[in-house]
Each structure stands twice: as C-alpha cells, then as structure tokens.
View 1 (cartoon, helix red, strand yellow):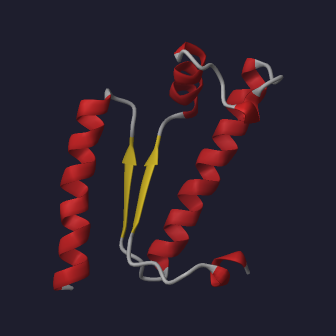
View 2 (cartoon, one colour; view 1 turned 180 degrees about the vertical axis):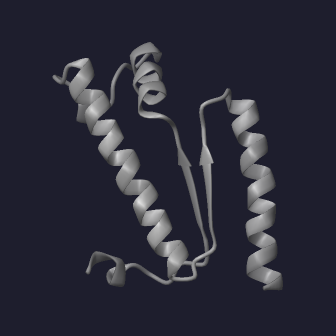
Length: 100
C-alpha cells in the first residue's frame, strides 16, 4: 500500500478547483496547459481533471478517516479569497494539532 510508505503526516491541506475552472485557468494563463494535458482535447482534459480531483478528495477522506487532521478548500474564487480561506483553515488545523 503506497499510503503506508508515506512519512507520518501531521496534517493535510487540500486545495482543489472544479475541473472546468482548472481547465479554463490553464487555457488562459500565459504558459498554457500543463505538459500532462498537451495533445488532449477539451473533453479529455476535463475528464482527466475530474478523475484527478475525485482521487485527491478520496485520498483526503481516507487520511481524515485515519485520524489525520484534514482541511479541504475549493478554490473557485480569486487568489485573495482563497488565501484568506487557507489562513483561516490553517489556524483551525494548528489549533487541533497543538491543543488536541
């Protein structure tokens, strides 16, 4: 099991975006798509992003079920809003790690 080979995890922060949002961001950024998506059409990219997003969330749920403090932020807003969400939830995670 690959999870057993990981070092001990104190906490996990998952930052995800809806696959459609992620695709649009890649299409609009100056450096273009990630190399992983080169040569794929829009549907293939979005299907792949859905699969990656789903697997990431499943992994987070698994670790949370194993007692790892986990926070999940869905980043569909601008960076300022996302950064504020991260700051707030990291404070919550720190409290659970050091006061729990």
